[in-house]
Image (cartoon, rainbow, N blue to C red; front, side):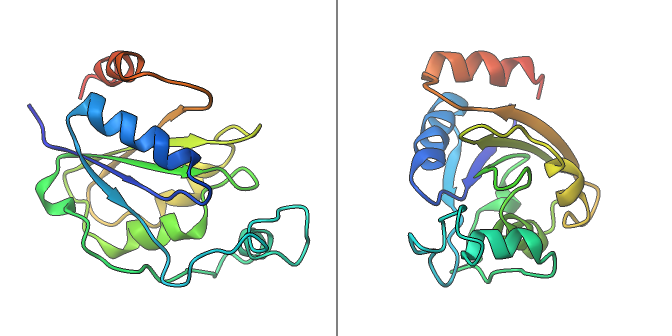
Length: 160
């Protein structure tokens, strides 16, 4: 059986709740990806054209620094990476996370939450951030309530 890690970024707590349930279902370690400078409520106002999240999605070069690089990636074979979808892509803090570690020989399964978007161009936008021989795969949108049993069924369906 492979060792698993659930790493997630959660701006409002929604993705964090999903990640905790997923970690329980997968019997995985849990790691929160945190930006060095936390997002404020004003930053997350996607309707404001000057908000940090809107600017981040327009500025592809933007790579926020992480608060730490202590994720136990080296110990895991399968890493679930979760985040909210912003404008059909992952927040750039996810690129920062993927660029900070060597994922050679590991499987990375993406999961996301959103108020209405799907994965869009997310997988494509993250591929260049993964170094090594990792297998990056689009996982699932986990909106709404998903219990531990539902998550376990999904994990099993991945044949990891």
